[in-house]
Picture 1 (cartoon, one colour):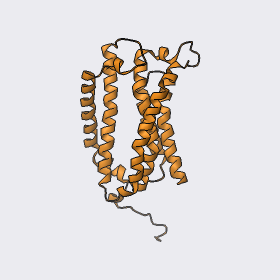
Picture 2 (picture 1 turned 30 degrees about the horizontal axis):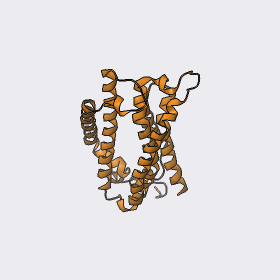
Picture 3 (picture 1 turned 90 degrees about the vertical axis):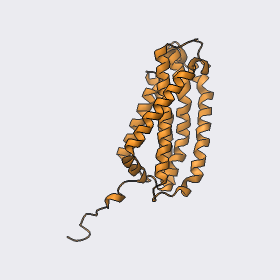
Picture 4 (picture 1 turned 135 degrees about the horizontal axis):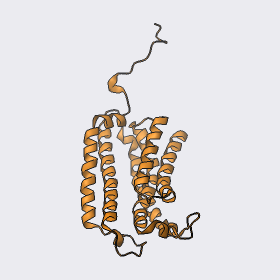
Length: 231
């Protein structure tokens, strides 16, 4: 068969990006780390954090034990995801195909974006809670209830912070060679599923607040893709 017609075979060891390789080879360890860090963080938060006292947007004096336990688990999941993300980044950085030096400037920008996003998220919370959802005669704070207010106060600023950091993180990963520059439809679908899952589990059970948590994450991911397209 002519060489132009013969299929090109890629050696097995070179298939996939460094990130994909790291996730495949270390999936059990990363899953164990996520479970352990989530469990430890949940236990610590449940035993030490007063959610009502930590959030100045609600006048209630207490939350029922089940709600407090649920919030502790949600905080634990965030800590577990963050721990797993850091561990994954360390594993990827050890891949010989990755050039960490190319990503350093943007890696330094990402924490600045995160802090700025969290600060902005906290700043707009009072205005958000005062809004009246469509078709409602009460404010958002009243509509979602005390537990929903605490949930939004905890996770909306974090979502804004992550969304603000995502563009720099995405471009840094591409420049370092950890992930390909152009994402496939399947890869974008996986990211969208992850965002929807996190937003659904870390927001009150209504469409408006789900959108508040999911939107910053989608905007951050989309901005990163647009940055790569224009770079």
